[in-house]
Image (cartoon, rainbow, N blue to C red):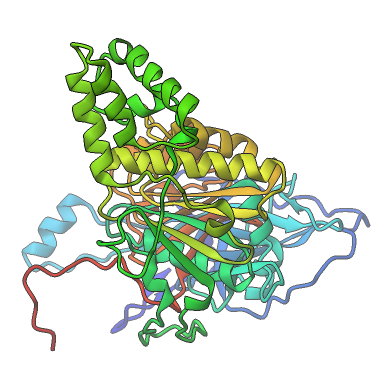
Length: 531
């Protein structure tokens, strides 16, 4: 091996393939008898070679000397004597040199030092498709000295299981480094749940919007819990910025497919009012919405007032409850009355609440815009909606659908309890049986209830740097290959690792541009001058 004078090109000759790093190359295996693999798809070897296998070779990974340009996480292929071409992925690349500390000192003094270097890689074996179209890993190792090629797109799609332009495919983006559309199986998204995880500003809401667009295009019924009012912008056409990648996206608005409801219609102009009746809440549930710590001291008092109203009125308001409590004139009632008057001011409850057939309509997307609503009231609203959707799906009163929950760590936390925690655990564990899918979106994976997160078989992981969140993600992703956990911290904005959804292994995907307007952009405090 030598470096051509005047260039940076690394030239490798066959005798250089045996490295001098205490790694013995095993002898070539004996010639195999006429035992041949069953017929399967053929993939040519006309691609440029990028390396050669050396050293000890296992059935799950191998080492290679690089003879061409190759980056970490790229796909490669190698011929197996029984199975034809086998797909692999580069999990690590390093350059080994003979340059020592003394050599560096000599170079600092101007003394030329010849540098012998080798670029080496570690490849994780993904496998091949057998005659039943099942993904298999060879049970016998590849041969040392076998040439490694950059994988062609047809082999990647075949082995990984990527189907383009599928009738049930949600187009989420392009495979990083390739012009291959990555589409997630919509049936699997709904049946097996989805989570989108990212640090703040990592693009989770942008990505979820792209998935919701696909659901709307495929006429899937959707309900979005939107704490910050980010999704109402999807009614309007977006702007697709020009990039070096052609995603094939045309701007489009979805006003004809979206219905928006909000408890606070003053803060959310254009939304229809979302109201609830008190008749469905018992005394304990009402007290859980207040700041009262000693629930028992007020439970009997409130229960008596509600029972009295139910006997005399068909429906009642918080103001009616306060009037009855004041009439009873119990000495400890002042604190309870103060809390009930606060709930009354929020104006969420009404004698006639929003009907479920107004809220959920087949093939439509409903946005529950909670902007301007206090967190404790948000929890009540989410709990009532989640419970209603689950119970009504069980008896087929509403169509199969996807429930999307933004800021999921607030509604189903790992530590502490939100009012709606229980219903999310129920939907996560049982919703698939009744056609109620769940998509949880969060910037703090470690703070989401593990009972919910572990049920999400399709995972979209954008850039995450918090150590606790990384640990939670690594423990919940199946098929995470060597090097991917580290890569999560280095992901560029707009690129995600996706697993599940009909895809056999985690993939690096460049998320496609949104068709509709994105409502979650950060606000500039000091405007910058852009050239």
